[in-house]
Image 1 (tube, one colour):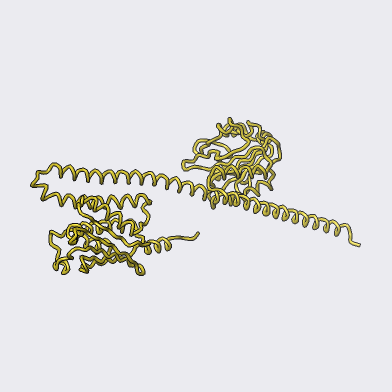
Image 2: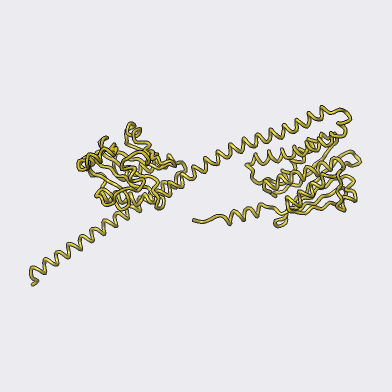
Length: 440
């Protein structure tokens, strides 16, 4: 038979083993509960796009888990305030006294937790930076009076005996906290606090996503308002310029008017074309435009601006080609000049001007073929000789080559024909965006 010493040794070994098993079981329970809580928080976060609804469901979930009567969620703002973004169970008077607190001027446990100033050697703290009390009155009896005067102690003054403050983290940065309180003692055991602490590490990124989406939404709304105001002012300014041109024409003597009116009409046509494309772009938030629609709008605006007294037929081939805002503005001037030139010189024997615009795309290259039914271009244009009387066509050539980085060919085929070829920048922009996306 084993002697008494052997039995004592065996009992001690079994006791230690039992303690280890119990500690492992507690650790497993905490980990399991933490994962359950984290999954629940993430499920809630994924259901919401509005912060207030998300915050309210989070605190309702924490209340259900803890069975405590009062729950609050604080997030720190840009200037160091930590208001209650959502709460349940606290009286209105308590909320008004405690929201917001400032990390710069207030002194209490909430501030210590948020700024990471918790003394982890104290029995009421955890390694993760949480604090918890299961009898605030008993704890405060042990605190020196001088230290009591430095702190707010509002929770105890309101009768809360059980209090836990759990940091919410985004990575290693503390962004807020969960405040759990109850007037009963022993409502926040360590196991519960540790489970909430671990789960709150997953809550931080979820809350941050909602806040970032909200900020982006507000930013987009602000930019939209500013863009509408700018668009409105630009349209008004373009209209004012057209009115000034009309006033100048009315003030001219008869002799001056005959010489200057064509120039003023040409300027008006260009401005109307720019106004038309500006209206199109602003209506679509400066997103890519359909090239067929752009051609029609600009051509119609140009005809209207020239106050043409004969019939002008415009036929634009339907197309799904889209171009970005920058290329749209360059093409506006090109189309305006070509329509202006066709109306001036492209009249047939019946006194009509027929204009057709054919559009096509091969790979990334856009082709625009502009034709009228007039006598065609003179030989000097075909040979590339643009004199001062043909400044509009010289402008076309300059815009296509320099701004669109394309090619332009002037030719005759049952009238004047202009072929413009340029690379569609939309594909390049999409490639740049795709290459700039970083997966995190």
